[in-house]
Image (cartoon, rainbow, N blue to C red; front, side, top):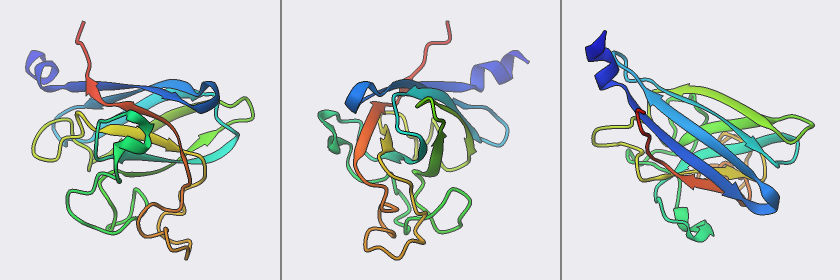
Length: 162
């Protein structure tokens, strides 16, 4: 059991955004399948669906716009989290309740915390609008899911095991 604990990798991102949007996202990757569990809580959002993605750059020097495009190491089209054709960073939508709070729990195999396509040092971004998962017919559907402005973001960094 001690060996399994040593190979578990944890990361965290503190979300800061417009209009008092605040939160945290924790990423935990455990063997043997390498699936990464994404869990967290974000407050201050408008009720409904919001696009939720991993972006390529861990740069917030100019706010969330500095995080670059969706993380897409395999150069695929935009899609939903269960689609074969998708960016690695396409995590779909989070649901925000009438109280402005989203409780997040997602499992994904394309966002590892180690190896060649690690998401460490990249950013997690919350968008103003729903992600159409590449199916909306809008000119931005196949690149961004037409998810609108970036209203909150945080850099993904290693988390202490203490």
